[in-house]
Image (tube, rainbow, N blue to C red; front, side):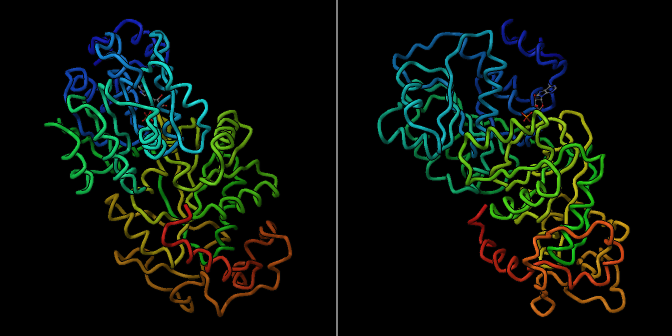
Length: 454
Ligand code: AMP
């Protein structure tokens, strides 16, 4: 299979060749002919599979013929859950469409209105948008969708998770009924199917193996952690390994991302946070610095990292496990991209056991536990599936993660968040007395377990 088979215009084909793509990925091979035939489509594909080109290439092809409808509104609209993903789709449209002289732009929350209004003041071919801001423009009357030929919902499941269902429905109701609609989703649950029923007409369904197929190149493992302090020791050990060239470290909350990035930087590792409290310009700058190698470690929350496409990520480290199993799959998909191998390491404390079990059910396999010499856990995870084995003598049942009774704040304010490297092995037996404000951390975690602070 080659790209020539798709009958794309020479300008588009030339751009594809310039990207160095020789063969279409499976999602491209299956989707492009369906989209070129004008059919609606619902496809399961995760980031990293080449799904962006799967819809951008036929969308560009469609734009070669001029619009027959007068007006200024977009002919193609792509909705994405996050600004990062929107940025990547926009980049892809510009890259693949560079020989086509199209007018395109993005409409994103957190960005100034002035430029967006300027974009919308003349006929536009492609708009990539996050749902909230697009709806805002619709309600103000600054955008009309009567010229819309193709609506693409990228990571539809995620948009539903993020509460965009109503916004999406309002946007769809403003679009012409004879449009073509494509829905890309990582998972095909009931809510996604219901949404598809409402928005798609007799869609072709393409389901590529969702769960692990694109992650065959990623080595996945986990380390049991007794406490926050233990997690930091493990992290320190991993980031000091020269084989870790670039890593994304996922934390549960924005505040933790800030704190961890600060601590890593203080300890001589070029690191930066990436989360939803940062404005878009700061986020873009951080991602660019990561791309250029000025930052080696990105400490991110899920929302900010969704769709993040940085080449050469050697490791993904789940400092905290995600609450949603789908997020685990998305997180680890930041490494092992475009044929490269990658390593995904998760820290799991006893309080995260539920999350681990959910993830393992979702991916259909058990993540192997590994110990690092001198940093083996004192506690044992009691996994339903027998993982972790029998308890060793004297080990506490639930681990010490956040256990109030074992809290020691003796050195909490000492300004030494990392354990002394040289004493790590010997310190294992006395780790419960190490210098972390464990309880404080835990209560913050409890606040955000409801998922508000991601
Ligand atoms: P996506 O899943 O769209 O985020 O794409 C993941 C990565 O694969 C991006 O860096 C693309 O540039 C790259 N890519 C897309 N299509 C191909 C292809 N046919 N051959 C090689 N790389 C590709």
